[in-house]
Image 1 (cartoon, helix red, strand yellow):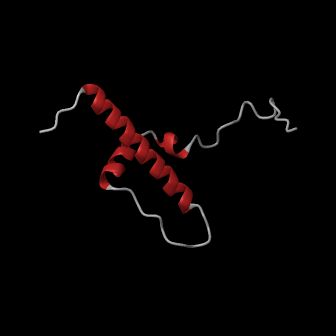
Image 2 (cartoon, rainbow, N blue to C red; image 1 turned 60 degrees about the horizontal axis):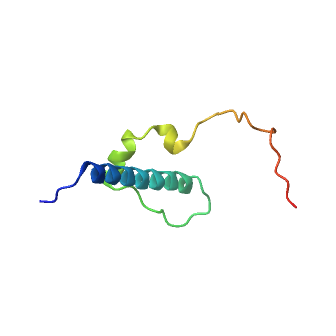
Image 3 (cartoon, helix red, strand yellow; image 1 turned 90 degrees about the vertical axis):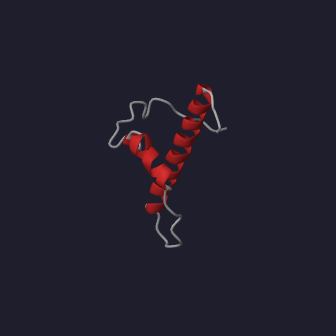
Amino acid sequence: MCQRTADEVKKKWIDTKSSAKKKAQSMKKELGRTGGGPYPGGLTNLEEKVVTVIPKCSIDGIVNAIDIFAGKYAIYYT
């Protein structure tokens, strides 16, 4: 039997959550693309379960958000 410390379990959860979030975001991006091509694949059972506990705005972004910094900062290229 494999035993892990609390820190190891916490790191494993953070890594698993991060990986599932990235894959879900990538899938969402791919679904919005045009031009055909093969479907990149779906989430595993574990990833699906992890994504259900992640806040939706964490994957989709904040919908209809107002950019309070729009126009306040300029980027100059030289």
